[in-house]
Length: 215
Image 1 (cartoon, rainbow, N blue to C red):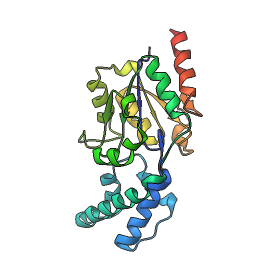
Image 2 (cartoon, rainbow, N blue to C red):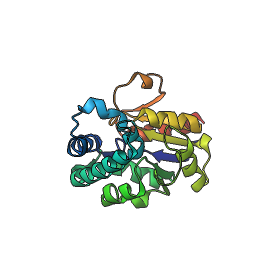
Image 3 (cartoon, rainbow, N blue to C red):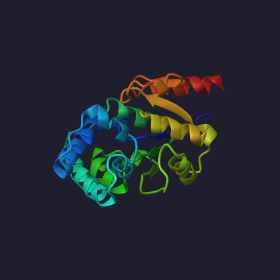
Image 4 (tube, rainbow, N blue to C red):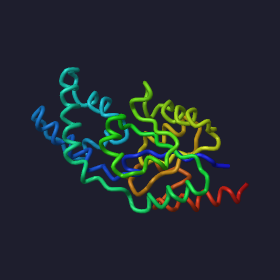
């Protein structure tokens, strides 16, 4: 029986994909004079910014400056972020039904304060694990395992809802069920064998109801 639902943030709860990538495009241009197409930067979605810049440039000093500039650009564009449709309704329904709820994100603690808190959703969640809380990050299992530990939840009774391959890999490594948030996900072959695919957030309620009936 599922009693715990953990969520990714970017691309799952909040529509931020274009903000993150456009901000990085601006930062690369302003800091390094580099031009990159959106599709060339899609790999950054779902991993901490620190890890993303490591894949872009070799110099440690330049990485630090790029990361700072990227964060500044995100802050300038953050007001364009929106919640995906029906997210609030989903969270309210899950809370009323007694599910333990948590967030497991690659955002830092500061990033969450600046880019998530304004949506007024914090009270729905029993735990929030950010990139500031673990040494290893998705696709490593540590962030999900940390969340489960914090709320005394069992992996075999938990589900992680996310939109990226990193989310899927982290869930698998944690031995929790994975549900693909198709509303924010890219069409990737890695998702072909995912058992639970959600076309919209409220579909999760149907999936959970069906799993309860199976028991």
